[in-house]
Image 1 (cartoon, one colour):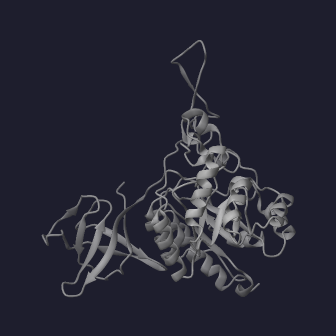
Image 2 (cartoon, rainbow, N blue to C red; image 1 turned 90 degrees about the horizontal axis):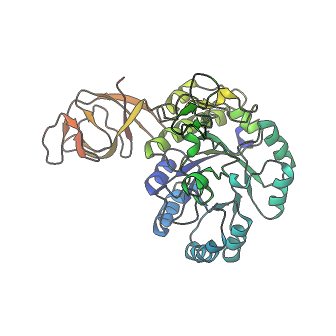
Image 3 (cartoon, rainbow, N blue to C red; image 1 turned 180 degrees about the vertical axis):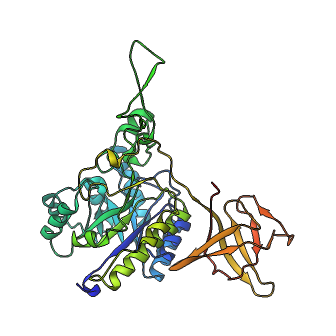
Length: 413
């Protein structure tokens, strides 16, 4: 198999315009984002109409694509606002719409007949008959349900008509409910997961209370490790690229529109490097564990392969905590360099100090270390630490980083 025969897309999340541009710069072939309405991540920043226009121009200038999520399950009261919103954005050069509700697909086609439709994972496509139904109705891409195995994906890919793609999640949080269609948040907190307002009650810690013994809490647990009974580990398939390709997956999707810019840059960069190495020599490819080490510098839970190889067991749950592992801090975003002074502008994101050893990395650029020896505030005064959020700094570097590069620091134990 040669790399000319393989077409792979790395698809990254973006919760706002800054994250969108970061995903593109760090190697995403396409970025999915939400608009101001009708996206399943109401808590993300999401993009205004003007921001969508700017984002798409940026993506297209960098040979990338932008996919708009419109994957809520609409109620009657949503129809007319949705129709009005589609009218508002219909002339934007959106490359595809990610949709789950057939009615929403009809509303999009009503005003944008040529729109490319990708069927959201929320639609729970788990077999080739359903996939072919959607393909026969003009859907260009099936976003597979997270519950599908690689064997099932391979069978589906062989049964789909030519020109219909399969997209599958390769990294990020796993939903305890069936491909994200969850009623728990709505029932417990009055916030509808299927309209973008999930409170993630699957990550909460639960105990048992007997009716006649109020106030007496008994742990819900299989053993003495804890009681996070619905707390799945995060999906990670960075070391399984050949298996995904063999299964017929052509778009590798990273979860995380609620995640930080640092997360997007770190995860996209690691997957980009791994995919590029695979495409350079598919037959002789061997996974480089350094890419996994890089991946782990972003916040994460323990990892799992999800449903791809077998049904998940207790080994795919974390019974101890729902907290993330955060071994590194995003401490600064590199700005412009002043040749006359030899100083580089940096926007602080978390505290760091003179004497700290920091890591610096950028798009398609491996990280390297620097020791902070000289730092100044906006007034040009020498300072020994930068404790203020988004503080404007000037730093002297031995190796001058490019604008847009990211600074991070390992947390002290």
